Every structure is written in C-alpha cells, then in structure tokens.
Amino acid sequence: MAQAITMQAQAMTAQVNWQEVQRENPSVRSMADSLRNFTRMNPPIFRGANTSDDPQEFVDEVHKILVDMGTTDIDKAELASYQLKDVAQTWCKIWTASRVLDGVPITWELFKTAFLERFFPREMKDSKVEEFINL
View 1 (cartoon, rainbow, N blue to C red):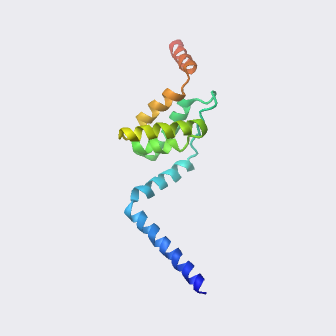
View 2: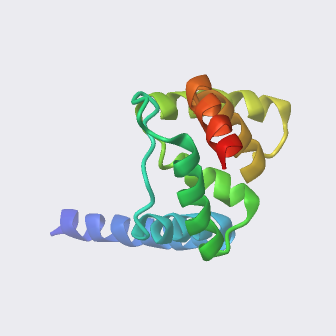
C-alpha cells in the first residue's frame, strides 16, 4: 500500500514538473506542436543515398508545406531536417554542428543552399540547365 502511494506521488510530481517546464519554455511546446502539424501533412523524406531522389523536389515540397503552416525561417530549417534520413541525416548533423560553432542561426535559405550544394548532383544540374535552355 505504501509503495502504491509513493508511486502515485512520484507520478504527480513528474506531471507537475512537466507542466512547469511547459510554462517556463513555451518554445519547446511550440516546436513540438509545429513538428506534429508538419508530420501530419505527410512531407517527403530525403535519404541522400539514392541518385534518383530529386533534392530540388524535396526542397520545393517541404517549403510549400512550411509556408502553408506559417513557420519562421529558422523553424523551417529545423522542421525540414526532421525529414532527412540515412546519409542526408548524417550530413545534416555534421553540418548543423559546424554552424552552431559559428554562432550563425540556421535559416531556411542557409539550409536550402547547403543542402542543394551537397545533394544536387552535377549531372542533374547540367541536365536542368540544358532543359532550361531548350525552353
């Protein structure tokens, strides 16, 4: 009986502590809500290992969703990074860590530029330029 009361008291304490954390740091709650809303919109996933994956298409589709959600430029970059898996996720972790050392906030434009520089193959770039010229 005493053990059940102790466990109930611990659970109540944990709940109170979580509520205090939520009140003290609304940006954590806000980002969790944004991530939940973002994933409900079924954004594409980019792995980075398959050359048939179009990084520009990934960027365009994710950006459309993020604009519809009304997110900030910094939140756009963070939310987009959740859709990177495998090779792309590893790249993002390393790249983000290097950016944090510079102290520069990671905006959507910064993320998009670095992402496309890394994952947009030269052959695909050349093909897109040729396609554009032929229009």
